[in-house]
Amino acid sequence: MRTGLVAVAALTLVLSVGAGPAAAKGGEIGGSGNEYFRSDPAGAPTTVHQTFGLTDDGALVGDWDGDGVDTLAVRRGNRYHFKNTFSGAIANFSQSYGTVDDEVLVGDWDGDGVDTLAVRRGNRYHFKNTFSGAIANFSQSYGTVDDEVLVGDWDGDGVDTLAVRRGNRYHFKNTFSGAIANFSQSYGTVDDEVLVGDWDGDGVDTLAVRRGNRFHLKNTFSGAIAEKVVTYGRDSDHAFSGGLDAAGGTGLGVRRPPPAPEPAPAPDPQPPVFTYGTLRSGQSAHYLVEGRTSWEQLTRMPYMDLYMIPGYTFPWAVPSAGEYGAVGELMDFPSASYWDMIARLDRYELYDPSLPPDSQRYYYRTQRPTLHAPSAWVYVATQRWQDYARSSGTLITTGDFTRW
Ligand SMILES: [Ca+2]
Ligand SMILES: [Ca+2]
Ligand SMILES: [Ca+2]
Ligand SMILES: [Ca+2]
Image (cartoon, rainbow, N blue to C red; front, side, top):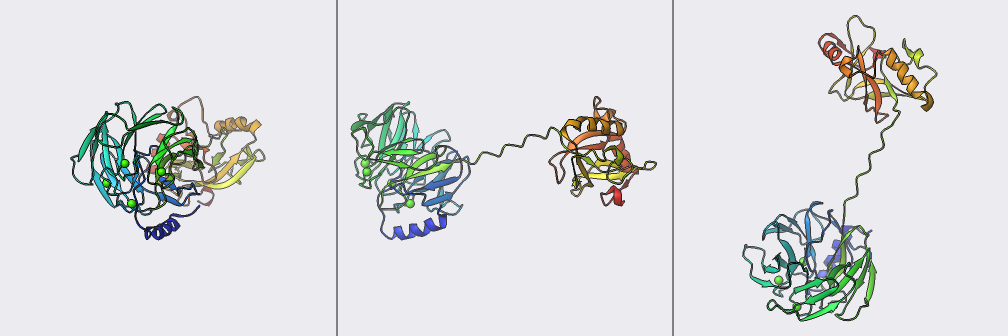
């Protein structure tokens, strides 16, 4: 995949050819994500890969500076942030227009080569020819409130106008007055996603339908057969159209949804036990587990301190804010004997799993992460013993009972 840097260099080359009519058309791109991929009109592999805005922004494409290149804008409420290049995170300028609930359209309503906004309310459209001021330059009623609306230059005069879709029938309007369509066309099916662009670079915008990642490009207003079929992007992408250069007609683009988060691993039904005191290798109670483990690993348990308490010869695990934590050994047991071993350790620690933590004699058993296991059983001092350890005990500063 080519990088954005390469694409910008290519763009500079193209710009010297000279500006032509804007070619991006229509409404918001839809979907989510802040990664955009663009291709040239021939449907070549990605020539621009751009990251812009936030994943939940509304997104639009248009020629905001009249150089013949269609670029992105993002919408947040009724505020629009326009970008004139394919790289960099900062918008070139911004505009507020309409309300947060308006459906927004992009087109070149006055034929000056610059795309601007329009908002739709029901079947009434309020067109703006500049990027400042709240008042529409003119308005038009067309079609019904239920119509899907498209924008394009259907007659090649450089001015974008509306079309409405009803099922798979499209009613094209070349002017901003009058209720009667200039002409109509049937294309594709009622379920097709439709795009508008000048696929053949003759200055006239026509339809394309998208099925999965295949785009059926139509260059005329009659006949059911696509002149060209292009494969681009992924089924899960949201598609749009836009011109990458001044001369070559409209290309395809996709907005890619952010990757789904990795599913959390299933919790270990038999996590290892983190031993930090007398159960450790060489310590007085190690005989309870010696020769019965399936796996052992020296490790640390962050956010756990070890204390000695006067009158006792074994350490007490006390939750703390310390990232270094307690040193100990992870011990796992064969699956067949696992719960027998846990029961054996519970008895040794005087832990009764049928009682809540505060009802335990010394310790309660809970799970905590360690450096070498996402979760491990650990016997933690009950709240009463935690308080006593902090007030009257001695912190094992090394975190290691065997080196204290
Ligand atoms: Ca531009
Ligand atoms: Ca314009
Ligand atoms: Ca026109
Ligand atoms: Ca055309």
